[in-house]
Every structure is written in C-alpha cells, then in structure tokens.
Amino acid sequence: IVALVGVMALLRPLLLDVVPTIQQTAALALGRLASYNDELAEAVVKGDILPQLVCSLSEQNRFYKKAAAFVLRAVGKHSPQLAQAIVQCGALETLVICLEDFDPGVKEAAAWALGYIARHNSELSQAVVDAGAVPLLVLCIQEPEIALKRIAASTLSDISKHSPELAQTVVDAGAIAHLAQMILNPDAKLKRQVLSALSQIAKHSVDLAELVVEAEIFPVVLTCLKDSDEYVKKNGATLTREIAKHTPELSQLIVNAGGVAAVIDCIGSCRGTVRLPGIMMLGYVAAHSENLSMAVIVSKGIPPLCTCLIEENEDHIKAAAAWALGQVGRHTPEHARAVAVANVLPTLLSMYMDTHSSEDLQVKAKKALKNILQKCTYLPALEPLLHDAPPNILKHIVGQFSKVLPHDSKARRLFVTTGGLKKVQEIKAEPGSLLQEYINTINNCYPEEIVRQYLKTPAGEKLVLLS
Image (cartoon, rainbow, N blue to C red):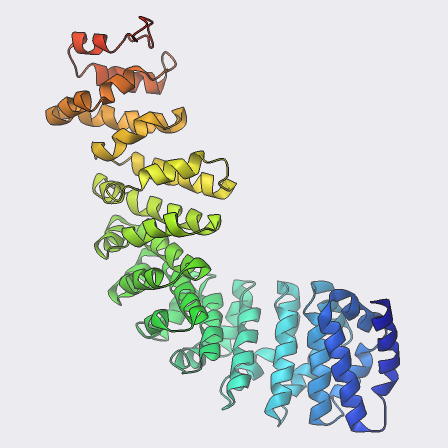
C-alpha cells in the first residue's frame, strides 16, 4: 500500500502533462488504484488530486472527462466520508454538467459517479438532487444507448431508496412513465435496474406505490418473474412485494392481475435469495385479510412455502417462509387447517427449538406456530406436538384441544385411543395456571374413572394433581 501511495504521488503531475494521452492514462491508473481499496482512495483525497480532476472535467476532451469521472466514482464508492470529500471539492456540479455532454460515454461515466455518491445515505443523495441531477438523469434514460439507460436507471434507484421525499423528486421529474415503458426491454441488465428503481420508489408509501401502479405495470411486470435472468426475476418479485405490502386494495389488484400465481411459480422455479422477495410478497398479501390469505391458499401457495422452509440452507430465507406461513394460517380455523395439513407444524417447532437456528428464525418460527395454533381446530395435526412442545407452546396446543373436545364426541374417542389423554395427564402444569385450566377442561370431558387410570405411573407415583 505504501508503495502504491508513492506511485500516486508520481502520477499526479502526469495529470497536467501536455500530451492528452498521458493525462488520460494517468487518470485511469489513479482510478484503478482508488477502486482497489479505501486506503488508496483516501490517498487520492489526501494527495489533493480531486480539485485537479474536477477542474479538468469541465475543460478537457471527452476521453479525459470519462477517465476523471471514473476516478471520482472509484473514490466515492468506498464510504460516505470519501463520497463527502468529492462533494466538498465541488465535483457534483461539474458531473451534472457532464450529464449534458454530447458524448454518451461521458454522460454514462458522470451518471455512474453520481450514483456511487448518492447510494450511501440520504444527505449525499440530497446533495446530488440539489445539484440538479434528477431531470438530466430522466433525459438519460430516454437516450438510445443501452449502457447509458442502465446507469441512469441505477442512479435514479440509488437516489430514490433513502426517503419518500427523495423518491418524490424522482417521480416529479417524470421518471415513472419512462421506467415503466422499459420493463419489456430485451436487455436483462437494463430490466434489472428499471425494476429496482420502480421498487425503490414504490416501497416508501401508499401514494408512491399507487403512482407506480398507475403507470400500468401490471400484468406486464409479471412476465419478468419468468425471465431467464435470476436478478430480473428477483427484482420483479421485489417490485410486486413493495406494492403488495401497503394496502389490501393494492394486494387485491395484484391478485386480480394473476400476481399471486406468478409469484408462486417463480418461487418454485428458483433457489436461494432469488426466492426471498416472492416469499415475503405472499406473506404480505396473506396478512391483509382472510380473503387475500385464501387467494394464496387456493393458488396452492402453501406447498412451495413449505418447500422453502425445508430446502433452503440460509436461516433468513427459512425465517421469511415461516413468517409467511404464519400470516396465511392466522385468520380462521379453515386457514390454519390448510397450513396444518401440509405437516408444517412439526418443522416450525423443531426450528424454534433447534439451538443452531438463528435468533431471527427462532422468533419467526415461534410466532408462526402461535399464529397457526391459536386458530387450528384440526386435532390430528396438533396431537404429535403434544409430545415435543415446550411449555410456552404446549399451552396453545392444549388450549385448542380444550376448545374442540367438549363439542366433538368422535374427537374425544380418538383422543383416548391415540394416547393424547394419557399424554395430557403427564404434563406438569402450575396449579391455577392457564395450562392447568385447559387440562381440567379436557379432563371434564371424560368420566372420572378414565382420567384416573392415567393419573398413576407404573411406579405408582402421581404425576399431576388435578382438581
């Protein structure tokens, strides 16, 4: 690193060389060094090279402008502090002027540098907006060059992501309509950036999501879920998720467009993190209402969510699947049964109890279990859990038996023959606790002599004191 910092000191005078080719080559070399790591990027800042580059950006030929913008991008990408150093030396205004350059390559290099500055935080993004970049970036996405369209869309995405206010400035410049027109562009890399930009706008508020929807992106965006490019799939699912999460009405619109079925197909056709936004989209849709949750069930959304829960290696993907299943099953006994018959409850329980599970997975699995159990009256799915569940989960399971058994004679008979009643007598409940009340309610469903024969172990010791 020390040697490379020394090299930078040698390169700096070459930026002022009388031969333009030497100037450009020196700038490219500086850019590559600065791109390598933050220490070298810092050396560019400390070496007082930035003011020189900014000055040359407005005066030199297009080749040098591209090289200078490359150095600014290479420095700014590493950290907010280095990006701030670029802002402080007055680079933004000059980069914005470059967005109006005749040469598409210069525009592209400038847009790229502005994006790398804006992506760090809302303050830097606001500085890019204040410099007047947004209207020119919207013009850039209308240019014929694909590479320029990609970078301009990416930069608009980086500006929009931080806050509703920043996203609104992008919307006010008329970006949505132009982005929406490019969803069907055959270039996969452009589609990725377009979908990302629309997602970053839609995520902030209902109003912004509605503006994106009004650009008639459905059902067009659903074709992206079948794309051969994994990132197009992922970004298409992300856009659908960011719209679905806001309101039942927006979710219903997606359902009506065939969005739930398309997302379910997408989850089934890919693996890993590409599945994540689709899993979450189904969870958001199901969370809004009984009818929307039923739309997920009817579209056969439960089996792929169960597959994700079992197949995936990453805990955060499993956690998302657990959460989504909890949202599907939490509404009514019918919803809970649809999830329970997929035999997902033992899996959720084992993930909650597994010490190797991440904290997030344990929390999501526990919450999903409780959501489903509190509505589940399908006893065959609950009975296996009686033997393994810890007390905090057991009370919900026993609680459901105490609700169903008093009113269902067939279930009462089965509960004895399958060993459920015996198991309930083995539960050690605190006297006066809710769990003890549930046990008492169950025991009161049976003649006293049947209950009594389960009260003693072979050794003759009483396991549980029952009132």
